[in-house]
Image (cartoon, rainbow, N blue to C red):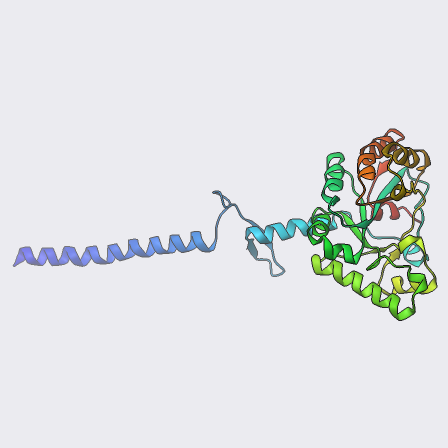
Length: 282
């Protein structure tokens, strides 16, 4: 009888003890699952939200955050003279900076253009055509994801100054909507096809909060197949504040690009984003 009583007491003590162990293990597993640390192969990051609490980010959220940071790393505040101007052909001549811009993309060669820019670690601005974005959506997204500035170059590259006000407005809406449908990004700049415009085109751009950008250095690479001639023209004509016009989709321009970059550097120019160049306007 006494032996049976001892066994019952021992069992009574063991059962709560095992329950406590099980509860501790469950709490530990839940904490590991709900609040992952920074150790292990699935390293996470966190940000502090508006309420002051840490929010953990998964890999997709981290990638989106990095893309957003890249897109805004060169988003400088533009001076009021830039917005008030009818158009910008050249920035301040007080600083030894220039900007390289590309028209008529995206194109199946876009990735190669970006490879060269990344090799030299320089920024550029791409003026995109709506129908080209529809044709090469992955290339358009690559431009944006890699942090390069973009602008609108119309929807289908027609001469806007020959169109009615309603048709011009429709073109702006279609081109901007097409770009935004590929990736959420701010569009600050507009370049009219052929550099041709009238007051209606300029005002429509302003209505969409776009700055109209022209150029002051044009090697006419769209009609030349000689990379050396293209590069020589750019290097010889570049001056402080220059906005350089080049085009996507051309092998000759692609081959000329390294020569252009190195030649501009040799003359002491800093190659910057269009936003950075225009931030010098006063």
